[in-house]
Amino acid sequence: MRVKMKKVVILINSIADNAPEDELDVLNQVCFAEEILEALGYETYREFMNMDFPALRQKINQIQPTVIFNLVEGMDHNARVLFLSTGFLDALGYPYTGNTSIPMFLTNDKVLSKEIMTLAGIPTPPWFTAQAFEGFSDDRIFIAKPIWEDASVGIDDYSVFKGSEENISRYREKYGSNNFFLETYVEGREFNISVIEYPDGPRVLHPAEMCFCNYPKEKPRIVGYTAKWDENSFEYQNTRRSFELDEKDTQLIVKLEELAYQCWDVFHLCGYARIDFRVDNQGNPWVLDINANPCLSPDAGLIAACRHANITEEELFNLIIKAAIR
Image (cartoon, rainbow, N blue to C red; front, side, top):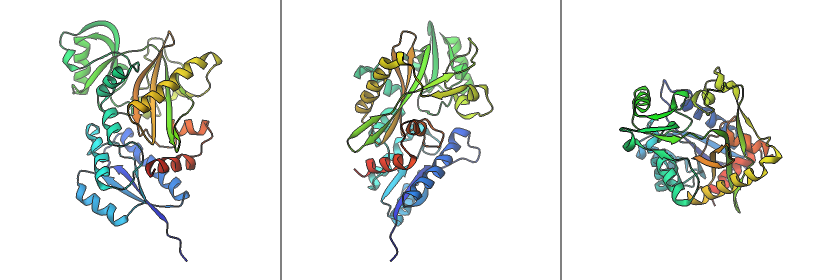
């Protein structure tokens, strides 16, 4: 007698013909997910998210999946409306992996997430939005960041500058948009913490430090676009992830973990997430970003954190699915 296999739809965003590396990475994720899920006994179906919701609904209903594995990172090449994808999945009614519409909406808008962190008492670097740019003058160093983008899109050495209207205009001209904010640049160290939902609650994994090796003194120590995506760049080759922290970092690790749990609760995160931090030269941690549904490619930070914790890829994907059908 043939055993009926469980079905999973792996949902990804559509890819443009001339897509940059950060958008193409979803193909690495879906291939990796297919391999792991098939090893777990699932029959996988790859579908593409787009604005033709009735057609996509019909396709998924024909498959009748046990669960939908959500790897969508944008809608019609627009990260600003990413929350529409989970809204569609909510209406569709099948269990789906990762974060639901509320945390996706709250974390996708970087300014909104900083406002929420401030209200919740979570330390995040001070920031300014476009309303304050006219006549702006501040001798501090800032980093300009897109409001709705992840994957370090729009972040490079030119993003770090002294606060002046002239420098803001130069950045605006380079990227052709006013959809960015200025965040006070925190000189110091950079960490990220991955969080996974277990049946009894979230588990924070060991912090990873991003080490900026061989960086010239004047070069900003940031994980910019080239550090993530351009394998031939200086930044990519000299920005390294390390889990080997010193004993003197024990108290810092406790602080980072406490903040990660607080972010999980405040933003109603579920499934899996990653929290990015800077730690200033006085040892104070600052939350930079909350990544709901972070990258799941084989070389991603979440996967590296799991390997360091002796969590296999199969265990991770099984936990993600269990959280979806809880």
